[in-house]
Length: 299
Image (cartoon, rainbow, N blue to C red; front, side):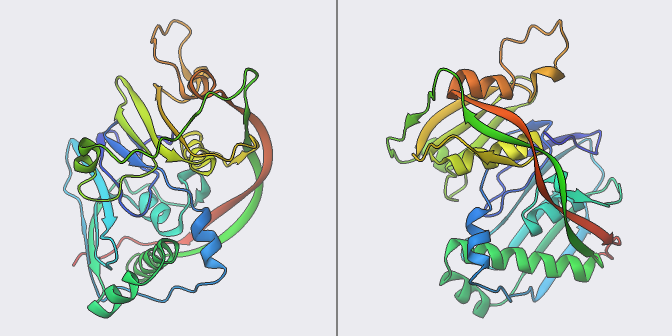
């Protein structure tokens, strides 16, 4: 997982409609959402909405932070708490941290609230989820360009990737039972739709990825975020699955030789618990390069 540029504790709360590659030192839940649907929608839909008003303030210095943020469903209302610029760009452009180059290390976070008007809300309510996501991203991109003076460009570079394959003894995934979310899940997500795949736990003891009818697309998206590399699905599996994946740490190679932690690392857990395996590969990687950025004035 990407490491935090801050030395203070970060507590993560749900990110709502747009998933964010937020560093987790101690956390609760992370939604894991694939960007493929939004990429498909982009071929036929051009977003145009912008915010009418926006407030950006630097977060007060603290020993620990709660990081969270969301667009209200079918609404232009955006609230972000303790977001650094890397998380802002990740949210605005739908990229992982490892895909961003050229950001300064400011070591600060921001609280942001922004919205458009009722006409924009009415328009958003009529869009598909993929189209709404594109509008959300577009509004945030325009805001960052205006207030942070951001200029970026895209590059395609050859780099390390992974192929996800079925392990030697076959898959261990359970076909979904299509059961509704539990009352505890509904309450935990504050009325937002419960994601098909989400994470909860604490970095001191371990995490669970909880799947309710998730696809292989969801799984490779989650693995790409955790391992910081693109992941291609080579399993041939096409179903929807339920599981709880328990792990502590990402790579077995990162653990000291004398580490006796009984909870497996993620690379081991996906083999033992899901019957899947990551194979190193090479491939093209989309990189978002920051050409210019400035600290915003507060208002």
